[in-house]
Image (cartoon, rainbow, N blue to C red):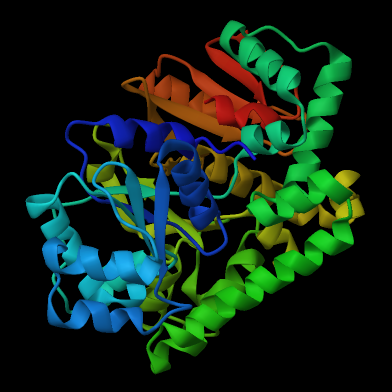
Length: 431
């Protein structure tokens, strides 16, 4: 399956300033597959080392972590000669070997001709919590996310539809209604399947939602297992409580995260470490409120006001145990959840596209779902789950801050009117 990360990896390989690369991301987003596929097509051979399946590897790094010492031993372990610039060296689940992570500093300084990529599911957690020396400034870093809507459509063979969507987005011209309906159907399928590569591949092959839900449940179980295995004993229960509660809070009219909804009397001091763990592991992300619309937005965020979204739509729906038909037909029973679900979907697409997302509220309660910096401009984004696009809050924002334009995401077709760019939900990846 096509993954956009391929272009980044190609640029990394050819860069004169290339350093060892750390590829991080949540479990099951396709890190290992993407690296090995890239290695297979761009190198003469790949030397692959997994610290989870081969714990004895740790011993190799205990005595000496200089490349001169490591390369002959790693060549022996891999059963093939590691050659400068022709072999891709891969360390997988590297969070389990702190010394292997530290060794990247010496690969950068003493042996830059060796091409090294390391991957880890919980690197964010490991880097933040461990006591070892992280090779700051000596590595390139990239986060891999689940597949976005574009990659999902391409996996299903809808290449020409993707091109049509991109053109309509660029020109603000409506899609032919039959194609618009087809793309909206694909959007609803994406909500159910999500972007985990294994689930997308299964869907492309079988269209079996029950089989996909079983796979999603397995991934969710592995997340719960990680919470137990890589977390402080006191924090395990709190992390699970917080994770379970994210999906509940997305069904509230006000999707701002409230600690008291996790448990009666819940406070930030009790749950902030648990939420930090979920975000560092790539399972969830925080979107902060901004007090002012000025650059850089980061300077004006309110650290006490935020929303939390999960990183994959399919896992979100599996966690809520929603039936596929409820989403395909957008039944009335899920009306309370539709808004939070659409917001979560848009945040996933914007994050994958590299945006830092924030939200805004006026003193009188007008709210903009997302504010991003696009092409140097601060752009408000309003999200509606259906084709009702009355947006009073957007009117307030535009009168107050006079942005160059605004984006309205909904079930409506493409268009442009009164400084508002109307974009169908399925085209959020174009932003």
